[in-house]
Amino acid sequence: MFGYISKREYPWLENYLEECDPKGITFRYRCGAKKAFFFRGGVGNERASPFYHDSNHLMLCEGIPIRGSPDNKYELVDMISEEDIKKGFYNFINEIVSNVSTIFLKTGNDPKLYLSSNRAATNRIYYQYTNKGIAFSSSFSVLLRFAPFRPNYDAIYSILKSGYAPAPLTLSKDVCVVPPSHYVTVDLSENEISYHTYFRFCFSEEHGFRLNRLDQILDGTSEILSQMDSSLLLSGGVDSTLLAHKMSDRSNRIIRSYFLAFGENDPELPFAKEASKSSNSQLDVTYMDESRLFKIIDEIATFYDHPFKDASVIPTYYLMRHVADEGEKIVIDGTGGDGCFGFKAIALYKLWMFAYGLPKVVKRLISSVYSHSGIWKKESFLEKPFRTIAKCCEIDGALGPLVGSPPNDVFFSNFEYDESIGRLSMSLVNKLISPCSSEQIFNQKTTVAEIIFGCPRAAAKTDLRNKFPQVYTLYPYLWKDILEEQGKISWAAKVNKGTVKWPLKKLLQPYVPHSFIYRKKSGLTPDVESYMKNQKVYSLIKETFMNPNIVDRFINKKKFIKLIENLPIIEHYSVPLRSFLWGLLFVELWRSKHL
Image (cartoon, rainbow, N blue to C red):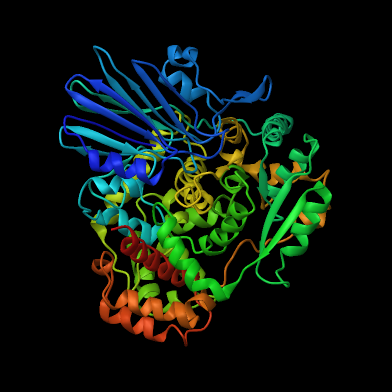
């Protein structure tokens, strides 16, 4: 989706969009002295992105809108009706449970423009002030065509350090993004913009919960998913395996599922096959072809809409290419299960609170030793505890678990960036938590931070509409009813005696053996060290960082060059080193492709 409302017209951009996507639909309106132009791309998927228009109203949705409840059944919104328009914008977006973004124009004597991002996951709306107007899009890279790029160094620093940029920040100083669970209202007469929340997380102080209610929600969710001609990314983990069984229970067809393996000896392959067999799904196993690594990395920089720091995007992109080539148009992804139902930061609550409670001078001293001694580069028995304490130098303990690469002797620490990014992040977190007592406030803030910052970063890996506009990915664990229900589950239940995601594991017990559920899962973890030592990739790294462009102010160039020279001989890359290298590479390569 794209549009602009301005006194100035941009025919070159209109022509560009129409030429690039001849199947797209154009809408034109007048708002007083301003022209309003809207473009909805040809989605190639009849279930996705419905719209409504008349002489005074236009509503565009990006994604697959679903509404209803597990009690009255969910339904696909394949058409936006006049009744939906009469209900008003807020009521419409509030009743949608799935992950969509929406644009709504109301003309007349009091013209207004409304832009909403979804509650979590992807599907955000970006906007930019233009000459006497505003431009907006569901694609960040498309919006960059409006004006020369001015890098936003706060956002770049945040991506390199934590893998995300808190809304409304983007890589561009001139482009903002509507925050998750928010919508903005643009008064077109006064040219004023205001922010509003339409969803807040509510956490119950009760110590128990109804497991059967969560089961009912997942049953209802799986029923609507099974009615679509959809496929499932089946990792063999708890989240996707539970969805596979519940969808299979409610479908009269065999569910198609996909798994990416790192060779025949991938430790997760037997479990993916077991999950497929027990759920009666048809499993398509794709093997990672590392001979194509250089080309894959080049395509990642080209086709993703915004850079983020998660190296597992490499195998994920490879898998999604195969899924698209197989003709799939709706893909189910289990992202969000960890954020909603228990992850390590909550399981290690006492450790985080101890580390965060250390005197600042102690934390800074340990962080300095971690950085300048070189401990941060290699896996060791000291690296992880030192890294944990270095992460706890954030302004709020809830942000610590999100830090992937604490500043080190190569990556400069910047107090001003840390302060501004930390305050912006926590301001957003606090706005999205309904008033509640201070009990377990760390877990509440950490959960919301993970859902609105960590989950969108993970979900972005399977969002490839820039490359495959017909493929839509759904994230049912990040739908409204699940986000509400997770807040009613006590921390003791989410991490039951140290077992993370206990509610989901309990619901999975009737389907698969205990040993399957409670094993230690390796996850989709690429061998980044071998990737970086690949001859072609290593040459790309050296070439890219010989003259870095937008990351140069954050690195000690002399030490960085030495680090790059030593990459082939460093053994056992640490998590921060792997994360840091990929973040730098993705940001620089993305810049070279899009700017």
